[in-house]
Every structure is written in C-alpha cells, then in structure tokens.
Length: 298
Image (tube, rainbow, N blue to C red; front, side, top):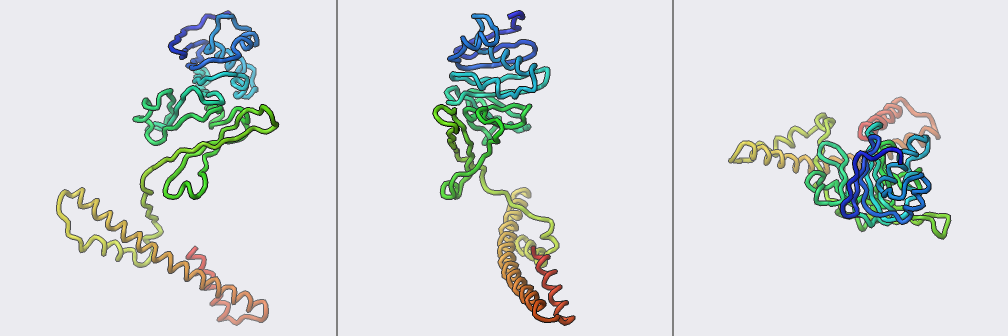
C-alpha cells in the first residue's frame, strides 16, 4: 500500500480503519482474503477492514460500477459499516448467513442507527429496532435496502398469511440466497411481530358538515359530572366523545351503505328505462338526483 492508514483498531474480531476520508468498522472474517489481496494489489499484512476500504474506493472511483459489487465477491461471515466523508455516503452490509449480529433502527430525530448489540439501540430506536437482513446492503446512494444477489429487486415488508396477522402486525423481509445448484436464488421470508399499540383515533374535518355531529359531542360531555384535575377531566371528556363519535360513525356508515345500494338500484332502473323508451323530464330529474346523492355518499 502506498498510503499509510490514518488509524487501525482491532479488538475481538472487530476492526476500524480510516483512509482518504473513508471510515470503516468491520467485524468478522473473510475466507477468501488472500485471493482478494492479490486482486486489489494489497500487501500480505492487509486486514479485512483495509480490503473493504480499498474495494469500496476502487469501485467508487471506477463509476458507474454498481455499489453491490463491493460485497458480491466477499466470502465469509462479516458485517461492516462504511462512511465516505467526501460524498457523505453511508454503506452497510452483512453476509448471506447473518452469522455476525447487526441491528438497525430509526431514532426519534429520524436518523438511521446501527449497532452489533440490540440493547444499545433499544432506548433510541424503540419499536423500530430490528435485525439487519442477512445478505443485504443499505446505502444512502441507493436510498433503500437491497439484496446484493439481486440488487435490482426491491425488498418490501409484507405480512404473512391472514391467520398469522389477525390481531397483530408483522414485519417481514425477503432474503435471496446464493445460486449454487440452480439458475434461481432461493428466497426465504423472515418475520417478527411488531406491536405499535392501539390504532390512533381519526377525525375528519368533513364530519363537521354532517348532520348530528354536534348533538353527539354535546350528549357525550354535557351531562357527565366529573371532578379532579382539569387535565384529567379534559382527557376523560375527550375519551367519552371519542366513544360516542365512533358509535355514531358506525351507525351512519351502515345507513349510508343501505342508501347507496338503493340509489344504485334506482340508477340502474333509469338506465334500463332510457334504453327501452324516452324519459320524461321528471324521470331525468329523478335520475340526476340519484346520481348526485350517490356521488355525495362516495
């Protein structure tokens, strides 16, 4: 190597290095480190973290090579985080077997955080904390999570079967495995249950224009006699109003559904009548009113 690394730190299979404003934290070991050293022209004393920096730097400078080529030829158990200060690019990846633990999540201020210990992120990331998907990479240059076996395919969180998600929410992730004996990549689906608590109550501004909403709210809070702190009284009144509004909305939805079916039947009647004979002015007005009422409900 022509340039000396600014800093190298190695501790229990974890190493850190900086070169040319490229920071890399690497954990694990590469089985094909020797052949990769020859490929990139590195010295025999070069470590895995040095190799990752050189591989990233070489492919970055030879753009437009895709970023997934940095890890497509790495064999072993590993996880690493690369930060390129010159381009403000973050690049994170794990091996295809996930033997080296790596976790990530979203902090309260909207930042993406990574750590090899889940306990370090629990307080900052809360319920967004998850294991980093094996065989995948995340790059701010790409803007999303990708599998480096199939980098053009997006990874989408989807639920499992309906029976598994009844009453709970699941976070799911596809993992594409190497093509060893076939021209297809085996795909596994890993899930974990995520409980975000009760669904938030939604109140739409359009409800204020509906008949009966004022009476519902007044009936929920006017006649209730409460005592205690003002904030507790307000919270209790809002809770009572929410219950009554939800009941009112369910009843109104049922009535609107029945009315919608009746209006559709009337519209079909007038359409069939128009095909067989001429409509009178009253029939045209009634047909137009049915359409208007049906559109208002929708």
